[in-house]
Amino acid sequence: MSKKPFAAAMAGLLLGGFALSPIAADAAALSLDQAVEKALAADPRISETRHLVEAARTLVEEAQASGDLTLDVNAFLGLAPDDNGGFFSNGTHTCSTLPCSVNRDDSLDGVSAWGNIEFKLIKPLYTFGKIENYADAARGQVEVKEGDVRIRRADTRLEVVRAYNGYLAARDTRALLEDVVERADKAVALVERWLKKGRGKAKQSDLFALQTGRSILVKYLNRAKAVEAIALDGLKVLTATPLSDGLEVAERHIRPVEMPAQSLAELQAAALEKRPEVAQLEAGLRARRALVAAKKADGMPNLYAGVVGSVSGSGRDGLESPYVYDPFDHAGATPVVGINWRWEGGVTSARVARAQSELNALVEKASFARRGIPFEVAEQYHQATTLNDSVQTLYDGSRSGRRWMIASYADFEAGLEEANKLADAFQGYVLAHTDYLAAINDYNMAVAKLLYTSGGYE
Image (cartoon, rainbow, N blue to C red; front, side, top):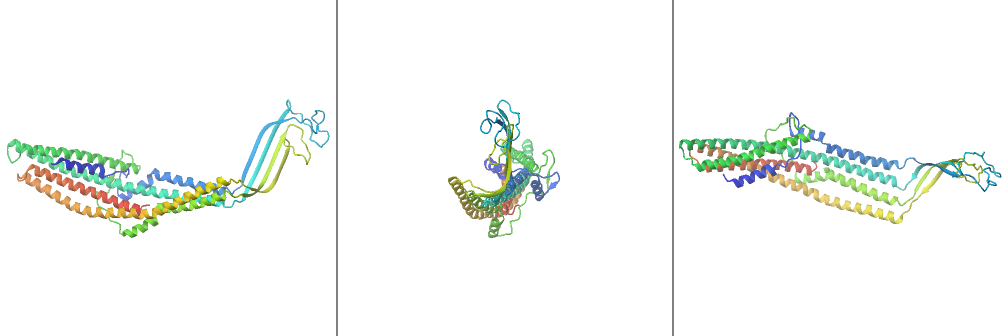
């Protein structure tokens, strides 16, 4: 048996052909659709993206709440100096000329306690679009995050398809190798009997050739068992099934799926309509336009109404004149209508320019996506159609390879076939059938990716 081509084929099949991602199923036999539903329900990465959607919604609430009443309070305790001089004569603490409050002799070493409260209750009346545009920008961000949820669900579905088909292919490969190893064992035992009895056309070199081929088959059989076990554990992981629990899949063998009924043009049109990335780009553009408008509005004033006031008290004498303001002893409040304007010409212009540049960059990205997405669909469509043709061809080759192996084995038992010819038949059948299984796996994944790129996965 030629070792190099067989080893290369099996290594490619078992190590590269089945790119397995974690997925899971139940202790009961699961179909692919059931495995997908369990994975979608159990995947914490989907829950993570949903939480990010809720976080984005709070930005909308925050922007809208900027138009509500706001209360600004500043309160402190401090020390006030004793009243001395001015209206107070000869260093006394008593007011002698103007109406004054009753003297409170609670000062301590030239100072007294001082408490002060200032408050503002403000309601914005008009902000020149700041609140509305920042809220619109936040809504666009929510839609972008909702698109992330759709993308994560589609990614999980694709992982399930990859793992499920990978497990079936690995299991079928293991069954194939067990069958061929069993036949190789019988051939080795037959040659050993012939050599022991001195009968037949067998030579010692025939025994060595068959034993060499068998050892290679056993090596790849063990590797196939490992890949099968890994794939099964991967299925358990994604569906939140404990690794210690049993798991069975409903399908007995890997089989090629049906090609989508739509034409390439129809799939490309569907992709531009259904792909979550397209909706994300549109939402992102709306958000960026709103953000540009908001940055421009930042350069405009805010009109407001409200109530402002302050209360202050200390241990010193209070002045009761309506014409003199005493910062240490007073109380007052008034309704107001005002304008607040923080003008930063250069800073505001730079922020507007930055927002506009980011909007322009997103416009260019959207333009490329409208060209790139149809190409992705076309790439997967051509891959799927080509592999579909290969699957049928390799199926015919696999059936012929099995007939070749069975016929060669029957001839070998009858003493009509040489051992090296039997080894070639073993090799030919194994290569043909493993290529067939790998082709089915590749084809099924190409169809899954075609559905993914055309927006068929939600």
